[in-house]
Length: 448
Image 1: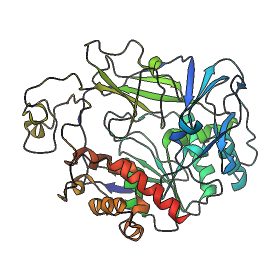
Image 2 (image 1 turned 180 degrees about the vertical axis):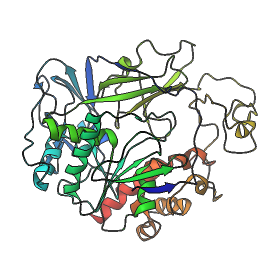
Image 3 (image 1 turned 90 degrees about the vertical axis):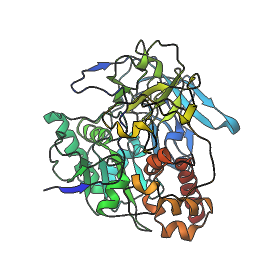
Image 4 (image 1 turned 45 degrees about the horizontal axis):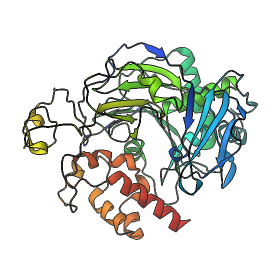
């Protein structure tokens, strides 16, 4: 028996360039891959190997400066090509040249029956670093014991692709991953899914059927509906591909360093699914698949709401599931600019004709379409924010660095991604996700 949740507040952005149903998956060959330490929030990296050293799939590249048992590993075998550093010698990315070599084999004895063995396996394989905790939306500390663990089984973000068919081997890997994770929590392992998406009931997990618009897939939405996070509690969060990697590792002892990437967006000739190494080259993922229309393009590693802006010579960023290409918009020349009443413009406001064209697929660009101004208490965040939280007041408390007020308004329950839609509809053009990230970091620093 599963739990049913219906999300009433939210917004589905109907954008052109989604992956059609039934699309076959192609292979991508990369010369190099890169791991970006900034993708592992809360982890300060310290290198374990040097430039020119050989590396195996699953071998540690760097570990946490505060705990050397918490590692981030290479997704491929090859050679460490370069360590790119920025100001104050901050490690910006670690580039591995893809080569030949056997993957690292992990000891899997007792990992499905002993909590310490299970924890050590996840730490050594880098899969622990792919999980996040609430509160603070950071990589959990190595010794964390979770109240509950939530697995996001689908993605409702714009243009996102979710797996809908599962072979018996894939189901076995997922159930093995649940069995391992159940050793790390005193509560339950919850797995969310869309009704009818094809994901069967998984043994050992509490299935959660979620209906409604985005952000229905967000871990925060599901956690708030089932059992909100209180002060002093820690909840683990991960996605379905990570759960599958955990299960396959526990079965075979070999880390799966690949991912399926949805290449989407209106500036892509043919939206497609590509199997590639984690941290793959963007140029390899997009090779020969960009529209040649003379327009400048915005390449986003991730979805349009929460993804990272990258260049064509950049690399796939965590969570390694999607690349979106849309027009940059810096070469646009249109009558009345952002105030244009063209039906081609998507808007949540009934002032614009596009508001009433709910079935139309829109082709937006990356322009801000408006100027930043003082925060307006209009209640517009509440229309797309499904959690039982007052988002506008929470944002004001974060800006004021009022810790007591932040705690009262539910900051322990939220992550930056929960404010992505509020940022999209915000007439004040505030960088809400950045504000929330800074607020969480400030709170963690002050309370640690």
